Length: 119
Image 1 (tube, rainbow, N blue to C red):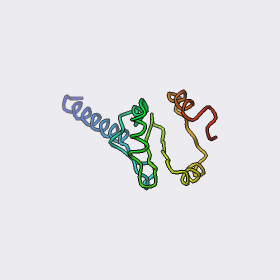
Image 2: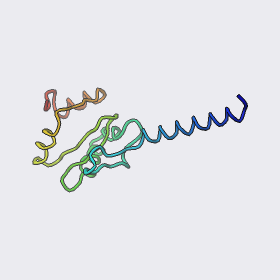
Image 3: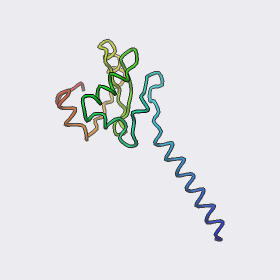
Image 4: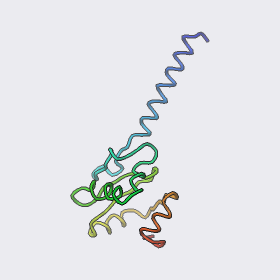
């Protein structure tokens, strides 16, 4: 292959990689009708760094909540929903039986909600 062909193939490969990487790293709401604080998310960690302090946790759960007291965010790729009002908790919990734990936060979650949270 000649030099211009190699350069063209390399350019197409780089453009494809950039396109796919941008698409993978975009933060999109997984529930369209629920508020998501995109500006607080970081690459790969999502909103995980806000869990380092009480102020950060309050920022992602209380400050960013909508009028119903709910918001959505990602932590290490896991979808998370914060629900502040008791009347909405039953609806959210019964909407799905899937609960994904993030191993990095197991000790933290156990300290906050106990070792026997909702199944």
